[in-house]
Length: 98
Image (cartoon, rainbow, N blue to C red):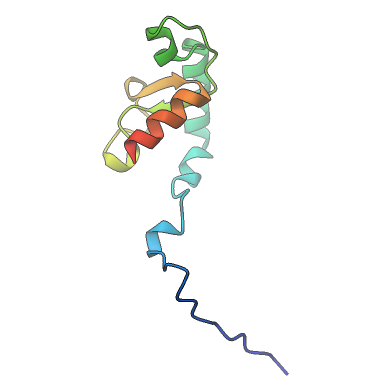
C-alpha cells in the first residue's frame, strides 16, 4: 500500500520564491558546444585576468565572463561581450551584478 508523505509547514523557515530555487538557469547554455568553443578561444586569446592586468598584477584567468550578463540583455556568443577573469575577480564582479 503506498504511503502518502505529509508535508509540514515550518513557520521559522522563510518561503522562497519560485525563481530563487533554481540558481543555475543558464546551465544548458554553458554546457553547449558553441559556448565551450568560444570560451576556449577567449582564454587562448587572453590567458591573463583582464581586471588584474589593469591593476598591474599578472594572474592567470580561469573564467570567461559576460561583461553585460545574458539575463540583462547581453549577447551570449559575442566575443566583444566577454572578458577573461580569475576566480577572485569573477566572484567580485558577480556579487556586484546581483
